[in-house]
Length: 347
Image 1: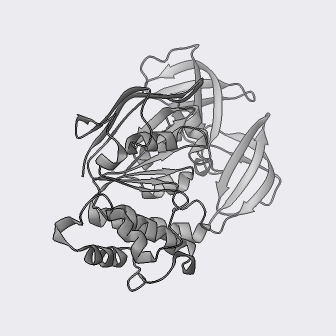
Image 2 (image 1 turned 180 degrees about the vertical axis):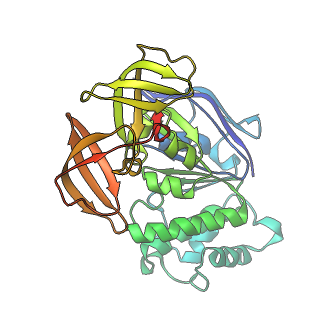
Image 3 (image 1 turned 90 degrees about the horizontal axis):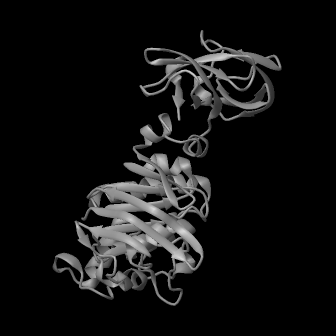
C-alpha cells in the first residue's frame, strides 16, 4: 500500500488542456473516487497516476517519491479498464495469470495457487477453465479485477469498470469491490460519472470539472456542504438561489433573493460577509417541507415521479425551477414549502 500525491499536475494535448493544476492527496489504504461528467479529466488523472500518461507539468509521488517519469510496469499498479480487455483466446485462469507477466506471485505462491486464491476472492471458484464469452458481464468484470490484483499491487486503479452493466448488477458489484478492497487494504482510486456510486463506495472523493478539482471531501461533506455551485448541482439534486445580503445577525444572513419578492434567512460561517454582498446558496429537495416554519414560498407543481419511499416533484417559483422530495404527492397543483436557515448551504 502506498500514499499518492499529485502536485500541480497539468496535462495538455497540443492546444487542449485536459488537466489544470490538479493537486490531490490519497491516503494509504484509502478508497478514493474521482467523479465528474464526461470530459472533466478524471480518466486522464487516473492514467497519469498509472504511468500510462506523463504530466506536462507537475509531479506524481508514491510515498513521497517522484514517479512522474517511471513507466507503468515499474509502478506496481493494477488497472481495470472500462472494457475489461479480457483475451477471448485465453481461459479465465489464463487471463488472471496474465497479470503476473512482469512479476512472480506474492508470498511464495505458485502461479496456479495465486490464480485459485484470486478466483476465490472474487467469488468465481472453479471457473478457471471457462472462456470469457461463457461468462456474464459481471463475471467478466470480476475476472478483470482478479487479473489486476494478481501481482498484489500497491495501488488499484479502476476506470468506470461497471458502466456497461445494468443498474442492479452495478449495485451488487460495487459492494463486492468495496468488500475486496477492505479485505486487502489496497490503496484504490475509482473513476465514475455516477454520483450515487461515488457516494456509496468512497472513503473520500474528488469532484472534477473542466480539468480541475472543484471539491475534495467525504461523501457526507460533499453532499451536505457543497463548496461550489457546480458541486451543488452535479452531486445529487439541489435548489439554487442567488441574492443580496441585507442584514447579518450572528451566524445568519438575510438574503433578498433574485426570484420572487422574498428574503430568506440562511446560516453562514463566513465572518467576512457583509450587507450588499452577493451570495448563492442551495437547499436539498429533502429539506424543503410544507411543515417548515421559516423561509416559506409557494411552488406551482408540475411533473411527479413516484420513487418508492418518496415522490420527486418538479415545480416552479417566480421563474426558478424547484425540486421537492415528499413522502407522497400533494392533492393540489400548488404547495407552500419552507426550509430552516441551517438547511441552506452558502456556496
